[in-house]
Length: 330
Image 1: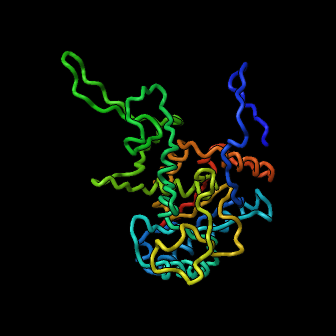
Image 2: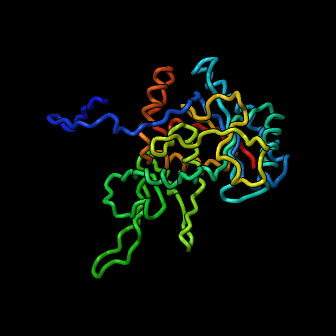
Image 3: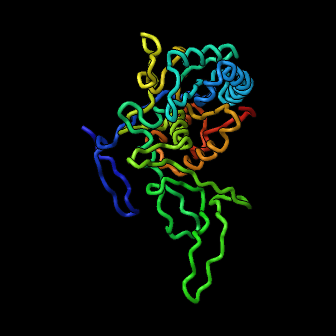
C-alpha cells in the first residue's frame, strides 16, 4: 500500500497522486571528481606512440594539480576517478586490442592510471538506448530578450545559439528602407558579447543523422556528472573488460569499461578535463549546450541530496560543474 502524496497545484487547490506512480530514478556511485586524461582523434593515434607519450607527459602535472585541488576541498579521502575517451564515432581505426593496451602503457609511463575507458560512439547510442537523441529532446532554448520566436527552433535546424543572431537581410518593400544590419547579441553578455552558434547535428540525403563533436562532448559531460537516465535507469554503466581480451572490432567493446578494479566511481560531482588547446572552441560549445538542457530532475535531486550530506556542495548550473585545463600543442 502507498499513501497518496499531495502536490500543491495552486495556493487554494491540491492534487493527489499515488507515490507509486513516481518514476524510479536509479542511483549511481559518485566520486568527488572525474578527471579526464585525454580525448584524442584518429590522427593522434596514427601519429604513433610518440604522440600519445607526449600527450600524457603534458597531462601528468596538470592532473596532479587537479587532484590536489579536489583534495583541498574534499579532504585527503577525496574520491577521484580518471577516464579516457576514444573517438570511434567519426572514424574507425586500428582495434581495441591494439589501442587500449597502448593507452594504458603510455599513461603508466607518465605515472598515470586510466580507471575508465569510453567510446565516443557510446555517447550517440549505448546498447539500444539512443542517448544523443534523448538528450536532444531535452533542449530548452533560452529566448533572447526582446525576441519574438522568429527563428526556427533547434529541433528543426540543428543549431543552438547563446543569444540572438543577426537578422537576415531582406530586400526592402516598395517605398520602404532596407532594415539596417544589427550585430548578434549574447544573452548573458558582460559589456560585450561573445556570441556562439553551435551545430548540433547534420543529416545526409538519406536522413542519417551525424551528431556533432560538441554535442557528443556535452553528452559525455552529463555521463561523467551522473546525470544521464533512460526511463529512470542509469546510462553509461561501467562494465568489466572482456575476459577473452580486448576485441578486434570497436562495436564489440562496451561503451564504458572499468580498467582499474579498485577505481573510485566513474561519475562525480564535478569534472575536470586536461586537453590540447585545440579543444577550447568545442568545449565552449559544450557549455552553451549544457546551459540549455532540461537535465533529468530525479538525477539532479539525487546529486544535490548526496552532495549536501557529504558537505560537497555543487553549483546549481550543470555547466559550472565542469572545468578544464588546456595545454598548448597538437
